[in-house]
Length: 450
Image (cartoon, rainbow, N blue to C red; front, top):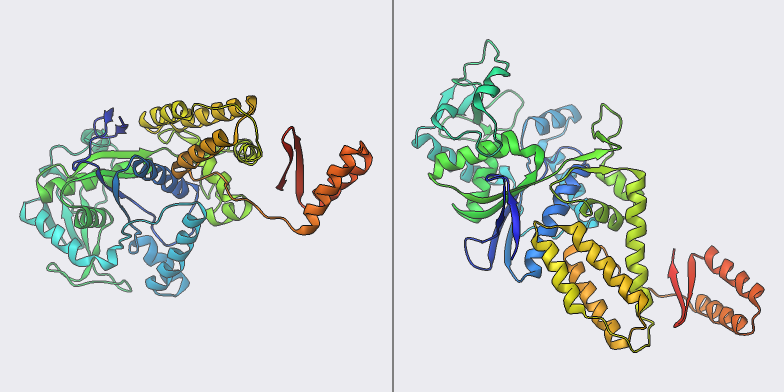
């Protein structure tokens, strides 16, 4: 039975969807004003793995993943580049879509954007206001945190500690330092929409509350995102949800860990910042995905050249095994059911992918130590395909080679049979120069492209 860690309760809990065999998930996506980074990639991969495993377990999944297309950073960047916020959004939405596609991320069921959901956002604020949790200031409509006694229950923040460390500006007229904006009134050179309170635009936190409940209902299973969103974004969402709807909206809150580069937090000021687009151009996206999933999703992941090299080698080991067992012609069998059971046991343990990968390595080890029959080989490959419907990192394509390459491989085999190893080695080197490497096995020669 699947168990996941619930940030709200700080416990690993048995996963029981609100509706049997149907799961509704909302994951906070990026703000589309600049290139993505490895932090965005990790969150996308983590929740893609979770979604894929639910599909593997025959759940019906409704997956909502938003793009934030209006906020202060977007407006500032658009003004700086002297283009409209819509042009800026269009540019970076395409970039994110392309990067996520390279990473093998399934497309969301719904991909909402705040500018297309203004009506739903206004309706949500109205509910908060009607229930007495909102008040008006000169610059916008605010959420009154003093009315919500459970504030801090998700992030385990203490309001007294927050207030002790808060910097309150003299001109700040908020009732409480933690109060956050629901609707910002229009400023010069800013896009705006009409509302009952005046022309303006939504605050960041209200966008996700309105969009998640619009598409998933007033009670849904999972809300996910990066560790950095736990406070204040998700904490404020939780408060808004309770204030508007009057009950718990999200059953399970899930958060993935941070990404570090060479043991330091990734940041532009440290000079260790690399865009996701550049990283995927310089590295095989399958290897990047493998590196992102190989550490437990709740733990921080440290990206180094060593980690990337290890991921590349591990993935090659799996893919080489797939190539190799297609050539077998023995009599031995493997109990694939046992490996399937152990893989699922690992994944059911709060998505313990490290353990799940170790099960795959055990399968490879046993396969290499046996003289497998063709029937058993097919069973193993089909099982690996099942596992890869979750992981999406393996290569099952039967690559094609030209007649020239085939002739060279056959010619080399002839020389080997004649024990003319000098000429055989010359052909091996020639093939390597053409991007083909060979491995001699008892079942014949195996080739693969470099």
